[in-house]
Image (cartoon, rainbow, N blue to C red; front, side, top):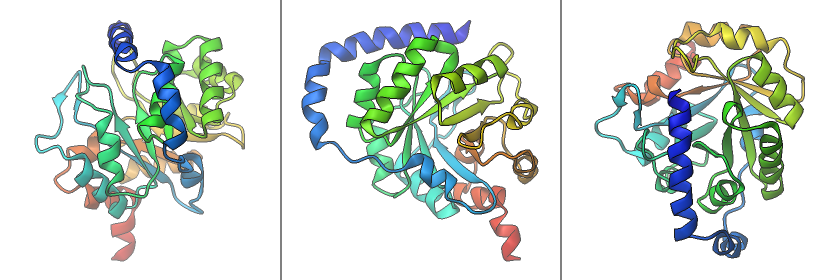
Length: 264
């Protein structure tokens, strides 16, 4: 499975990272690190309509480079102007051409809290995430066992950063709840076929506890998609490719939110 290959390479990269910057050195630097912003609170703050997590994404392993003139700082500014409540930054280097440096670049032009999106499999990466300025981290349920998932959520809470736990089906959804997730992202992309179906989120939306924030991820490209998910009870969405590939991400985001329509 392609995901297994990504995770295996991530573990190899992680071993090299730990040699270059050991955990004890990260721990010494943490007291001077930033105070994380309220990622969950920012998403839940909207009284009506949906909150958008807009993603800074350079490439994908399936579609290659998505944006030729990629500029994380410029994208972050456009997303904030377009109405984003949070920014997602992909930091995985090998397959997505991401970088930890993109978080700092994004923060130069936005006050929105930033989610670090990567393949996080160890406590080292959680500490590292706080050090590089992330306000939240992505944890993918399918690559973590129950004990590790729960432990990483707990560590994130201790460090004051939020954890968005990504699931792809009902069993993973139940695991995330059991592990203590307060933000659950339902990825509408089937990891085996790569097909996207928004009904994956719709089917699980009715089972979300009131205290848990539900985020829909992948395949959201039109205003109609947004309305469909909002009617299902979804409070937030994560949108990447649609915005990155747009000629004007700010205008596209306003269109998705219905802002442009409300002005006319």
